[in-house]
Length: 453
Ligand code: TRP
Image 1 (tube, rainbow, N blue to C red):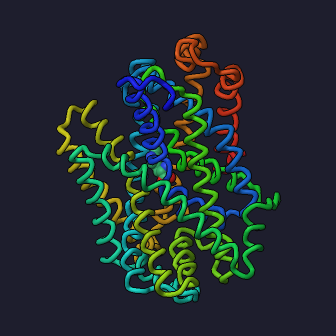
Image 2 (cartoon, rainbow, N blue to C red):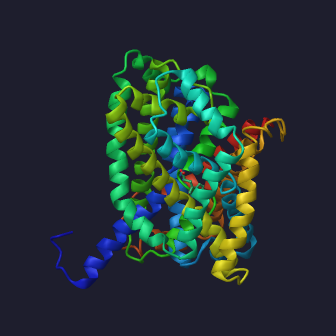
Image 3 (cartoon, rainbow, N blue to C red):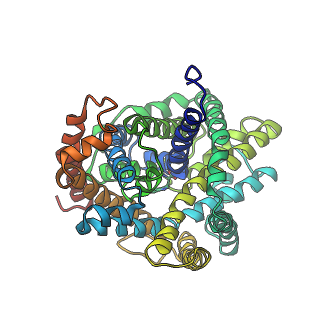
């Protein structure tokens, strides 16, 4: 880049390109990578889940992300309006995406709240290598009444202030510093984790597939995780790419963003699973895994060093979660502003009140309301499953079908190659993915995951 003549224009584009990659990666990298991926891997048999997850990222993640980029950049509109303009029959895909964002935001802030709470727990030295002690600390927080609701409210207020002021762009700039720091911290913690005595067993669990564990349910969990982690299937990436210049190389971006997201997820897995096994924690414990195991890693580092790393970790986790939940809240708010003609402040306020009520229900469902179940899941797990294992894959199915079958090959090619000015050697392969491979995989995994086949 430096070698180009430094006209204003070329500098601007360099800035905007990195800016876009970081905004998209900021949306993708969040609780999905560090909280959800490791606990699902622990719960769903390790290697088999990870293998199928990686297949989903490579085949579906790349193909669908590119499809979303192409739609967004072509229409220069946010998701609902983009579909309305391209083909009215597909408008429901955009609307379903808004619903998915809304549902995810009905529990995501609960986990964001835990992360904020843990900053203070680490400050107070509430960490130990004892599974029973750590389980107690997490159980008291997540199963409590007022305290988790309080921290959820704090987390939600951070989102509200940022979105109401329309300053998310500033936060995304900050993520240019934050993400490399998070990455470096994860590498250090992975090294600490895998050098614990007995950690190798954990690494083996994570990476050596046990094919007897590859059930329809496990595959659906991995598929849903790929969508959730990459922020796909609900038009988030359509909206982001609607701000892109016609010169941007979409194919490159659709490789870089999933690659960054997946490296963070794998690092998080390599940090958490080996330590979980080495320290004798329960691998299949579900949503508490990160909050129980990671502080135990800090405890092995001694009270001072452990505190420093621990505080840094939960501050960065909170910030990573924020850049993701901002993108979700923004999807809902901009829909109300653009399509329902609401004022920004009103849209943020009303949305947030409803989200807060949903979050209260989700939080209580981890404690006193745990007896209330929908299809065998508490409210928290139901919201998570409904959005990620159902709405996102269905959304992704229709987005790829649209690009593969309805838009017109020539129009797609013109857009993705910037009017034939960049090469895209595997265009036909990608079209084949959108036409057949991705929709068929999604349909089969959906049907077998729900238990229909
Ligand atoms: N990908 C984010 C995470 O891993 C969550 C997220 C942000 C998301 N925007 C999204 C998930 C859009 C699905 C769709 O934490």
